[in-house]
Picture 1: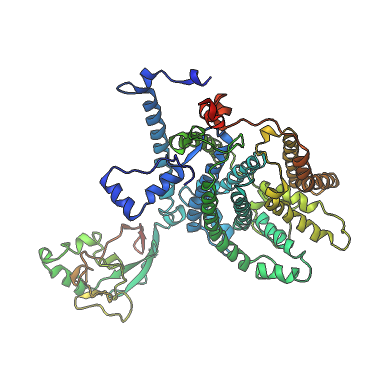
Picture 2: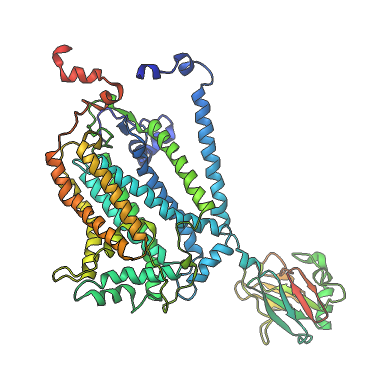
Amino acid sequence: MAEEAIIDPAHESGEGVRRRDFINIAAVSFAGAGGIAVLVPLISQMAPSADVLAESSTEIDISAIQPGQAIKAVWRKQPVFVRNLTAPEIKEADAVPVASLRDPQSLSDRTKAGKTNWLITMGVCTHLGCVPLGAGEGEVKGEFGGYFCPCHGSVYDTAARIRKGPAPKNLEVPPYEFTSDTVVKIG
Amino acid sequence: MSFPWAKEYNPSQPFMVWLDEKLPLPRFVYNAIGAGYPVPRNLNYMWNFGILAGFALVLQIVTGVILAMHYAANAGVAFDSVEHIMRDVNWGWALRYAHANGASAFFVVVYTHIFRGFFYSSYKAPREMIWLLGVVIFLLMMATAFMGYVLPWGQMSFWGAKVITGLFSAIPLIGEPLQQWLLGGFAPDNAALNRFFSLHFLLPFVILGVIILHVWALHIPGSSNPTGVEVKTESDTVPFHPYYTAKDGFGLGLFLLIYFAVVFFAPNALGHPDNYIAANPLSTPAHIVPEWYFWPFYAILRAFTADFFFIPAKLMGVLAMFSAILVWFFLPWLDTSPVRSGHYRPLFRKFFYLIVIDVLVLGYCGGSPAETKYVLISQIGATYYFLHFLVILPIVSSIEKPAPLPFSITESVLGKDEGAVLTANPAAA
């Protein structure tokens, strides 16, 4: 019985590809591909879940914000600064030569046409993510009259552009639109 | 390790040589599940289930650690957090179904592994310690599975927690305070849920530790085999790799096919619809049973309906249920036959099949409502269960005339053993 089971030695020990090599490679690659496929659910389960993604847009009523005032809203669990700029603040922002800035952007690049007084930015410092001061009543606005981050001393101007300190970028402008004159939809 | 002809790990790459001197982990693996572990050449597919059980544990740990990232062990939100996993978390449904059915798969595999041990008497010397550690693993598995079932905080979870901790209230004098201590209250609530979650997370790693001891103990005498005849010469063995890695790999493929068929096409077949109703301390579900893998033991628990002399029925049921597993600890000394394999024990074999049927019948009764006929069958089944281990096995062992054993594993496979002839009859050489 066992003698019959011996495989033809010409096939077993001959040069080139043996049948067993094919079976071996096919089986191991199949298992390998399956193992890699299993990683998809194991990894993607850590990505934001459906209920988190469902929080991706927020509507804000801005009717009560007077010139010179700002509010903090929440979008994706992060603060958003909505600021009604005064005429001097707009003038101050426009007076800065754009080319001299670390992250060159004009105020009009950062606001909607015809609504340049509405400066809407994330309240997240582009250095390491602290919430800068300057949106709340009585908070320090920094030497450029915009925002000041107390963590590591980044200073933003009245267009929320980085002017001094370690932050690399201006405060981010989130995607938003005016659904009416008094309501902004963020996200 | 086990046999003198075991191949030695001999790295050729300079890095592997360097690593072998500093941390011989590859050598350890090589000797444990590589070409350095000689295994009897005649293992059948019943020897697949140890690896499968190990795989099932890893599966449970991986899916379980992930579920714990999304689950909240708080009685106020636990039920909702499970629904959050099912609906919101990416692939959450797959991970939860894989974990819930993974528990069932683990028990299927482990029960097969245990009954393999019964049939081939794998518990006999020199492998008693492997068996004892295995029973410990099984007890830990039962505790882990029970506490895991409580976590979704549905109706079956809640009442399962209440009933199972109620078992301890049967203990005289300290019973009631003990149950309150276990629950951290008078009924299952946040305290119980939190400690169950903590222990449910911990115990699998304890199981992993005991499995390491189990495998360590296994590697001292080496694997048993279907003939029950110990390895004599090199021709009785083949290296674990590639022979049994390939065979186990094939078995693992079959296991995965069946397992995923259930996970994807019948994920709730083994569950109870009532557990999709949030826990309600004011209303018990009409038909309350544990998960299928506890049914035989649950039937034994319910079989005791009358006080037994001075012992109340409640306590008797609890004692019997725990004894049904504890009796396995004594198995190596209850079965005194020197022959291991059921293949060579005609009388033992008949009783083996009877105990399999008995456990299946008990399981069926355990899953049925507590009606008179099922309780009656359970009583007969439970009596036979203990008779088998405590009376039948010792008697069979002493009166049975076993069939003739093959001289060696090689002889059982090839019909003759050239090397063995030389050893057995030196004059012929």
